[in-house]
Length: 325
Image 1 (cartoon, one colour):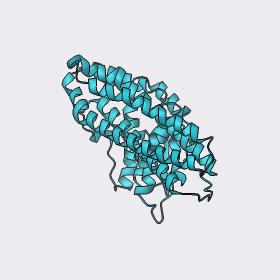
Image 2 (cartoon, one colour):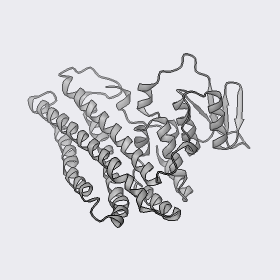
Image 3 (cartoon, one colour):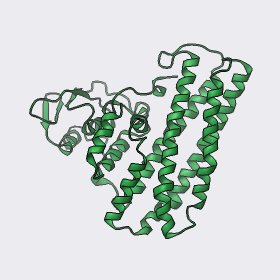
């Protein structure tokens, strides 16, 4: 396999979404970039994603006494708030340009932005699981050990763990929609979300069934006929789930989410619903936060952190980012 399938053990500020390793190649001679800041802070995470978008890496250094934030690029230094540091990065490295919060389409409800980004992360992780399963299925009896995944039995356990984490995110996202988004739409049109709720109900047994299949494979004879058949069935079931989830997300984004604009919520009501969405994702935003962010491109991770900072309960955000290790 490869490192892209290993779970990150780094704090939130230090993880790199796997997509960026596929889409961008390192610069021949990248400049030294250092940020004097706590590694567990949301600012460090935001600055790291900004630099990843520019295809640059960041070295975190303990903060300097008396200065909260200092960014050092080569021999140049700048200190100040997060926005000051981001502007400095944009001036030094204008390409590719950052899509900052002020460039977002403000007319789109905050709940829609959050839901779309969650869809993106889930979709990416689901695609990764499908590719991984297909690789396992077609690998045959080759037992070459990749240090990133270990023996075949160890890799299967890691494969199952990754799927369990994805399942947790998917279930919590579905609950968020059922508890917050769908009732809001139902107030305007009681029947509009019936099909979406029914699809959630149909998907749950399938997702749990795949998890049980993985557990059963753990006690099978590796490489035996039963194992091969189970792996082939698992690959097919994951591919089918991926196809169904993509269609489900497309339907929601094309048919349901645009209707949120028609609810005509006041600014205060929209913020209340928006914060309810984040509250409903408490597990994802705690011990699975790194996993979730790995499914986003750097610019998308920055947007998600920006949305997070709009919440009024800022201490909770800092605690979540600090605990996401």
